[in-house]
Image (cartoon, rainbow, N blue to C red; front, side, top):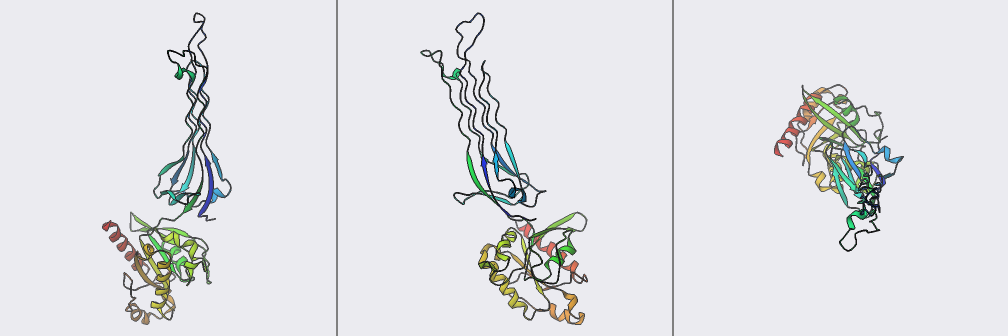
Length: 333
């Protein structure tokens, strides 16, 4: 199950108390203070891992507590530090403070991590408070409490290519043919109910990732259909591949509707490189395909690409063009 939102509570450990002890040796009847310091409390650390793909685990565990620091001991022995807690999340997870709504960090790289709450400092033992006028202090410092926060975790997929299209435009079929992803495919709208991520192997040693989201309908940015919830998953993509059913009566109109939904959701998203393709070429006579390919789409960044994921017509040309555009994007940056 794909889960892209979770709320959790994290609490760092309390620091250990400092000790009040004195040296007690056979020939030192009035030894000085020897209380050790308390150990620091454990912290809570969130780290991104590339082999995770969902926030499902946070449905079942919502509270994370780090260990407390041990109190100081005699003979100037310091207490042990509390154990840290590591929380694993998928790459692309955004951490927000629930109280303020502000983003704390975007864990957009494998291995990237952050201490979200720090453990409390251990208290000082009485050995730290001896002075010429008070050589036997009978007090020590208490350990400090650890930080505590409520966090929001939001997952946004990181992909090179984001697929955009109306329901049943053939996005799931395409990703199943060019990658190892196995989305549910059927001949009715909204077959895709959650995002799919596929890795496309290109030639011998290259690859790129493609994200397929549920189909967008007009009004998606207002919450209609399933588009609004999943548009965030193509915000990080380098380029957008629009899929329009070749049997559609008006290609330009469909593209305009899709583009308007993206603009209404995010101007930054709509400003990405846009490649427009016509899917399901197997439904049209081959003699008509060349005529269709000459059509132009306004406000697109590519010629019209015609393909069929079922028959394979134009499929390699599409993959080649995607790779060419991706290389161009990466070279510019």
